[in-house]
Image (tube, rainbow, N blue to C red; front, side, top):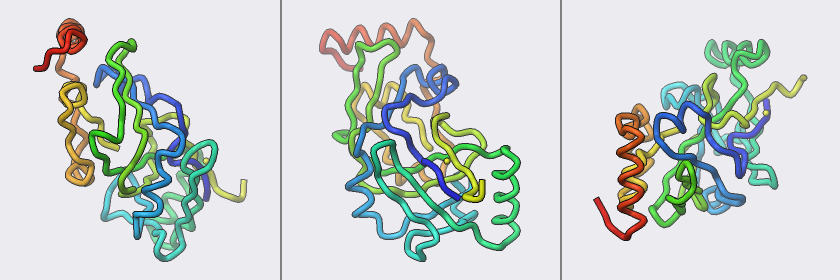
Amino acid sequence: MRGYAAVYDTPWNEWLIEQTGYVEKVAHGAFRKALTRSANVPLLWQHDRDAMLATTRSKTLRLKDDARGLYFEGDLPNTQLGNDVRELIARGDVRGMSYGIATLPSDSRMDPHAIPPTRTVTNAQRLLDVTLTYEPAYESTTVEMRTQGFAAIPLQELLSGVEAQADDAAGATPSLGAAGLSQRERELRLSILERGGTF
């Protein structure tokens, strides 16, 4: 099995843009440092740490930062879960990937003037996992069998510079607190920030 857990310079899906009020992209090379710092990265099913399929330590998961994105190759286990996932990929039910990362506020840049506002992740401190999913945040990610390729940070946290750490969110349901913001409230907050204010 092989594919891309992340594809550089591509936005996440429309649903997340609607829910969070901003676009997120990953810059070229954002995973380089994390790949040298992350001792054992698991391949998971749906970000579930109890549904581990492979690891970098055992060499059943191999990761590489290339010109397109975060490339992976993995060997699925001969277990009930592994066989079920293999079948779902072969049938085309599962086509995408996701990832979990730990970042610092300085590891991304926010452009509040873009419409919608755009966050670009430029660096990951650690790679927490890569995961197979039927509903990827980034639709450009891929997975396929060789025989045949996440936590949303609420907009108000990004704009105020107070980001929740991915380590804390790794096992939790993604926070979509910004979903409750009306379009008018988003515009007002951006206007305040543009004038140098805070909230």
